[in-house]
Image (tube, rainbow, N blue to C red; front, side, top):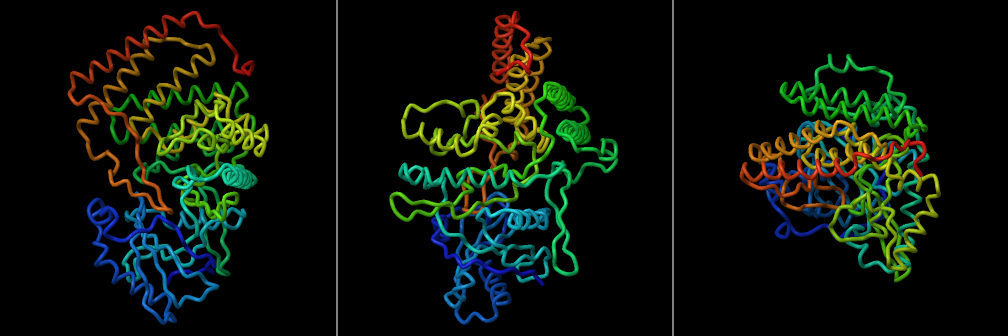
Length: 489
């Protein structure tokens, strides 16, 4: 029997829902799910079981789903006003989803912070229900997706949203732990939840012997990073014994992590509650008039972890460098906009957060440290990450004035691009879904990979051209001064 919790009284005017005929057939085609028209009857059975006192028919609405969950809207005019009239049903697309952990994170954040978020109404981690699979039902929050709304907000409305967004970041940072990782929970006999922080996942296929080989003391930032790199390196060799390139990459990350630690960048050894995907697509905003706007909810708490302080201080440059449907470039985060209103928004955010936050947000060494953390957590999972890793290796070498063995570095770049080109030819299945289906509760995972030449000869030309570019770069910079990290501004 699913567990239950009290529902919010909020009603929904979320604009992400649409009729079945207006949305992608992702669930049916891409994930080989039961067609929505047939699935509705199962949802009706579930609703009648969960709400036996409902006196009217349930309204079942197909909403845009994400990469990991099928999303369905549920409403009934006979629902009591104090319990909420609209709900969201989330059904995992894959059988190996970690449903109980996702629920644990959601409850933990709700209990430890005042951040606006949906309440879990029902949760069933089993297959013993009319759907035949795990599910979560939560109240449907009001508001529009900020990714859609921000461009049309007035300056005064944006200032209100920016202030509340900053307050949310600070509220999350107020929750810290002595180890990094993901939140896990157990339910006691009295119904209370006990939480612990577990190690970041690598993969279910990773042999237990590999975990035993790494140190258990992850209580420092450096140890956490080195442990994760060792686990990922072990996994990459288990998956492909010839994948020595990944092993070399993780060794290089370990080297840089040690240098960062030696330079004092990891002085703060606490780990802070961090929403790693706190982007406009995961924020709902309500507007009342031309001056009033407020954040009505933050979504996608599956991405919440305990992370080092520098990972929790990423600058949300979309506030003052807004470009529709484009990813942010952290290297430009501290650029001052020419538009006076955008300049004011940046200044307003910086003042809200304070100098400690902006120090971590804008300094280039902490931006590089953030990338090291994300690789430690998620591994080298895409060609884009490999390309960015090469940029970080080069940038860190320039930053510390320790550009050495350029030929070996250039060779590594060439191998990386050659491997990426070959894999792109061999494995089209790695491509992200092209449905562009994003709901107010979900995001679609894409790699945003660049287009590569399609024939092998032209790919070799890309590698050769890159090699020449890197040789030129190192020839120009071979006399770079040896600048200590500690002396950098």
